Amino acid sequence: MPKASGIIDPEPFRARARGEGDPLAEYHAASGGMRTIYLPEGKDTALLGLECSALTFVISGSVEIQSANRSMAVLLPGDIFLADASIPEHLVVAKGECRLIQVLVEPDWPGERTNPVNPRSDCPRGTHHINCKRMVKGAKDQSYFHDFGLLFGSPGSWSDITPLTGFRFIGMAEDTFIDWHPEIVNNLVIVMSGGLELEVGGNDGAVEIFRQGDICLAEDRTGEGHIDRMHSYVQVAVLIVDDADLWPR
Image (cartoon, rainbow, N blue to C red):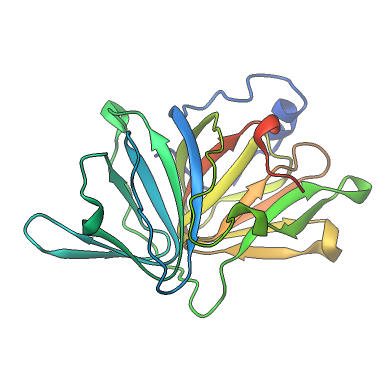
């Protein structure tokens, strides 16, 4: 997991957004795509059921996983688990108002590039509802936040698979700061720990804090862009989505 800290020069972001340099210069893992599901309380469905390995992100509610020795792990928003097609369905159970994002990964992922991650810095959502936004360029070249309810479709059913260019993980220390900059590619950001603060010029200078399990689709690739600040140590997953595969607005 690449780690950032301190004040980061925003000019390389601006230059690459203008097409000066490789927009995908950083390492990213290959993926067969992603899908989402919303399970209201008491609604059951197969959580795996794929013929490949999948990395599942808990967005809301919880997931209980029973191991072969009958011990139980409870995963909460911001947690992830990796499973392949050999895992019996009855060992994985969703609880509460459960929302999940599942990323299809290569059989040998994460492979030799794996490094230990920092202990999780909690910044729980608490009583707040899931913060799920998309950040786009609007009037006066400023970025704006919009609700992103389209990400989770009809309750109880997995969505169709959305293709991904790839995905990666990033860790950012509490002192990390990036001044006004546009996004280089379309990034669906899932916060796993800490609190990611984003400020835009639109919406009268709106500020949103994304906590464990919260989501922001950053697609403001031109214009003024946004500011990044961190609350505690922040770890995020970044899913890269091509223009042709974005959700309708």
